[in-house]
Length: 213
Image (tube, rainbow, N blue to C red; front, side, top):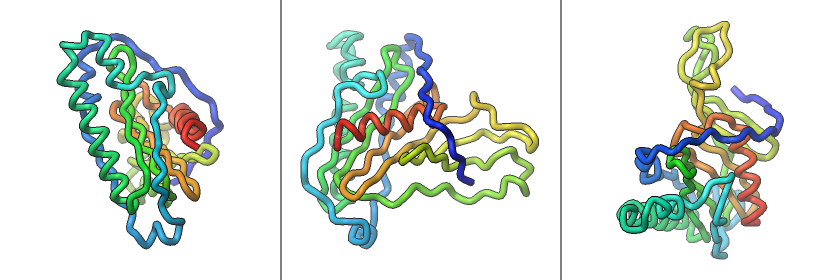
């Protein structure tokens, strides 16, 4: 199922909760793209990429953590650094050595979190697994592909009975992506809080796209 939504960013909801550290250190898994797909879509580029200092109003996770005290956050910062570095290396390898960068971002309260994954190569479009919502008597499939301009987003919906629209408070964005001949930008959500509107996340992808193009 594919839905078209107008671009209209919505501000995130934040409040200080230090327990949100868990969202920062969640590991990222990026499915490798077969070499055949890369050949068809265009070869990779080894050009370096640098993640922006802020994205979508959020700071680099390392900077957000450090505000709680350098010594107190040292272990968490080290884990974020390693996760970003290792995921970037795996992303580059999956795309035949293309330049890649990965950066986690966090709000001031450590409650909202997402991860930027960018690589200098083209990617196939996102795919939402087919689910027969009508047969299951559901308002919407569990995963929906939403397009906003050049950006695609995968949105998760908690089960709702047929005849009622999906509850925005029970839906969350899994990831959003824009891809061109020599650049793919993905924002992967590490928390549901603040990451419920695909239009806003699509706007963040576009912000990163402009920075990295």
